[in-house]
Length: 410
Image (cartoon, rainbow, N blue to C red):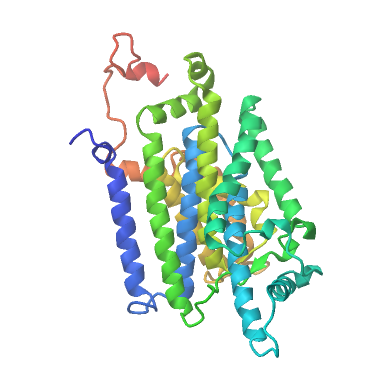
């Protein structure tokens, strides 16, 4: 029993237990199913925060554990949102079109219905024809497959080209950022087939559920986000444990030595990169129906930089640290940018936190990097008593030649 996965990783059960209690508390307090002291808008905020925690897990796995500072994971996040958004917008528009055609003298043909749907969706870009990328928009199962497949394939192609060329360090980060920028600029064009800078809107309205209030729909998405975060945490914890976890940490710390030991470094990198892209895509597919809209601006490179800041503040190399960092920054950002923090009049200037929030976030990142590199997760370690014990000169390893504490500190 002592050798079981959960026995070796008790933090997993603690995390899932706390997440379950938090989910129960929000459910009971929501307007839909409980006492109503948590508003529907705040339930949506909490649901979106859980989705951001999920992509932060993916970022921590690819950066904190295997050492790839990806500045492009929000591209995968956005692609997942676009894939589910296409179905939501198609079906919702179809309901509206069918309702308006019910009073027609003659029943509409399938072609007329499709043209009417196309006109409603693409009229803003001067078209009524469905682009090829919308070929499966009518099918929820196929679009759900694309939520996983599209980000995964993009990550597979990009990762294979980059890793086989042995691009590492800051050059790899620049390439991931360039990929995100190129994709964002492409989606801004009307020819992309995704309505250009208009993006996809009305995603909060689930098709065929007009009678269901938003308060209940928000709870459904909150539950789905909590379940996805729990499963994502379990998956990431499994990946970083055992031999596989040791190898990817080795790649992070000394890539050449791991390669000389006979491991396929590129294969490990590619697997983690694709896996985290899929996780990011799933997070995006849950996030944007709660946000209600997605456009190319959501995939700008700055969003991926924010993601790295969240993980750094939370403490990279700690899965719970990534979750804490994303949740903390997301909720504090909502507080500052929502106008809930009073401005500070200085006489000659008034500090408006809506304008100064990003400055405060950047300053926090610098301070954490310089003075608390372990981030919020380091505080959790301190409270839990997980800091390295004082060995008082005892060997740091099993061999007689292992470094001793006083040597390691030099």
